[in-house]
Length: 213
Image 1: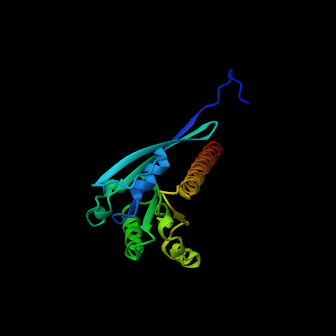
Image 2 (image 1 turned 60 degrees about the vertical axis):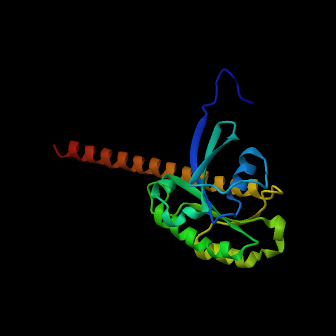
Image 3 (image 1 turned 135 degrees about the vertical axis):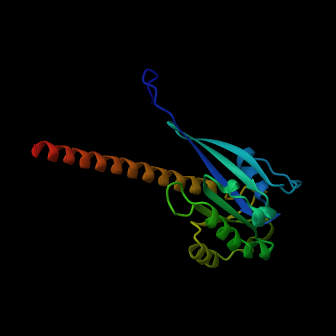
């Protein structure tokens, strides 16, 4: 229990997450289900890019705001880098009932890797694969094949999802957020270590100057 007399400092994070994939794979439905817990069969195809915000009380002292960018499926060929700029993670979505949308996943991932990396690094952003609409054709999933595909093409993991049944969407985003926060902690620790090393170097240089005079 926290004592009100000594309030805990609240840490707040804002992360940009891309939701990409071919037209009609259910990207908007996934976002609506995750952010608002609603589902409709009548969503129109996204034109250009749309946004949604999910606020998560990750822990008593940590609030995470996820800015979800719903990128239109037809935008890949003409995608401006500004759409991907500052993203730290992505969900690549395909429709299990339409094999061509799975074939397009490699192109989406290659496009993603060519346009954005984790801040301050050359590393690809955290990306998972969503095999969506499993309510229509769950037996379309081959776990071994998808495991191999993810390993070969740089996906952290895959999830079979259904916006209609609200299946695995929360689990997928939870997994992704854990990876983002772990990466954030590692980056912060590297900065602390580098700062400490510089301090030691400066101290050593100061002592050397004092000793030579």
